[in-house]
Every structure is written in structure tokens, then in C-alpha cells.
Image (tube, rainbow, N blue to C red; front, side, top):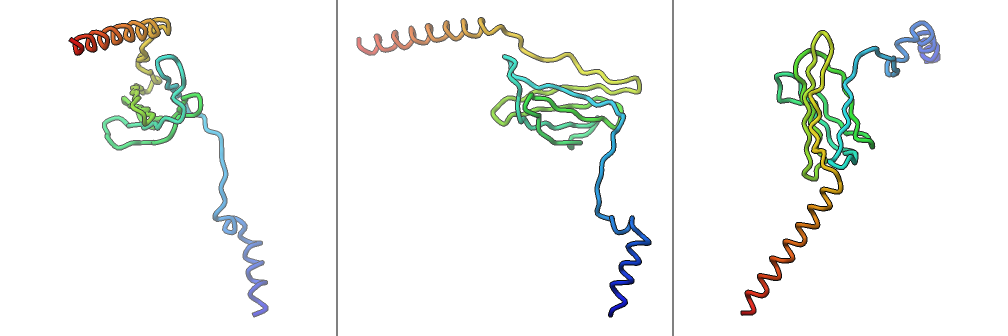
Length: 145
């Protein structure tokens, strides 16, 4: 029985790699990543939106993650083709981007953003409020008759 601790110590000393079988580490990689920023119409980032990456020719996600606080997400494609990246904030906003990857490099399709100036949105809201207020007034006046 007194030999067992000595044998274990000898084995650990002779085979240190086996003793670290559950270790972990990291290493830098030199690969080209695709980085995309998801945002709402007025430029506010889609913080924490769920992002799914669909590989070429597949409906099963290659990767599922969340956008960071600035609405950014990155992934490294492992084969050529058209990759579909979908961001969903869970509140009814969903954005889809297609990244074309080839041996020469990658290309993101033109951004699909509704570039409406904020003043136009506020003007549209004001007009909508006035029209709806007029309709409600007309409806109430018609009921009184």
C-alpha cells in the first residue's frame, strides 16, 4: 500500500502530458472573419439579437450566437458559397444578410437599410396623428346626430 503513492508520483513525473489531459488553452488564428453590424432604422444597434449563420445549401444552422452590445457579430466561413446570416431581436425585427465566399475572398451583399431621415419619420408621425384625430372627431360628430 505504501508503494501506490510512489508509483503514482513516478507516473506523473514520467508522463506530464497525460496528467494534464483536461487542460485547455488558446492560440491565435490567421483566418479572414466576416464581421457584420446589425442596427435598427435610426442606427441604434440590435444589442443581444440572436444571430444564426446558415451555410451554403443547408437549412441547419452552422452557428447560433448573440450580437454584442454594438450589434456586431463575426464568424469564419469554412467553405465557399453563399452564407446566410440572420439576426432576430425577438421583438419582431429580423434582418437577413448574404455573404458570398469564394477562393478569391468574400463579398457582403449591399446593406439593406431603410435610410429615412428622422425628421421625415417625425413629420409622418405628426401627419398621422392629425389625420387620426380628425377621423375620430368626425366619427364622434356623426354619432351625435
